[in-house]
Image (cartoon, rainbow, N blue to C red; front, side, top):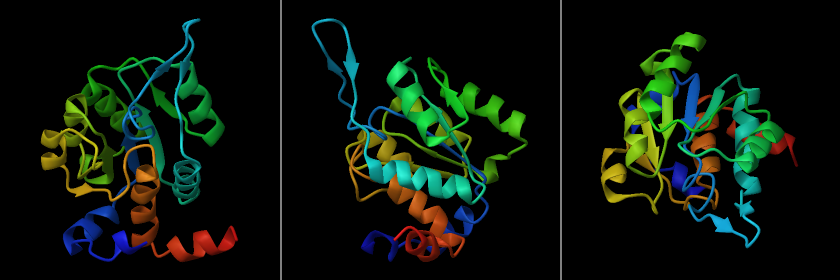
Length: 180
């Protein structure tokens, strides 16, 4: 976890306040590609590293949301399997969706982080104390991010963000040791 060693102190301080993290799906949980079969079926690949990270931060009391512009049964099934309660699909205006969720949960901007890879995700960034992107994200989005993961979207980037949250609460090692 060498990626955790060079984190700016100001970012670490902001991370300590996070109670809600909102994720885009395509390009963050997945590599951004959508596989379509001849019969119209859609396939996506999700990384187990990311699933473990999501479960770990939820155990620490962090609310997790996915906010995506597309509607997909695969996303619904995967997020339900992980125990994610806030699955907001078909939301092209992600800032409105995140703002409504913040109001429902009583969570402020200072207590919110978001992770995205493309232009529609910038709306979530404006309502977040910390914005995170991926190396395979759009250059404009990466320039607006407070942190760009080492891992590519779909290959452990979500886990990296989760590990940051676990680290600032001094439970990263404990969480991972308990699972061995």
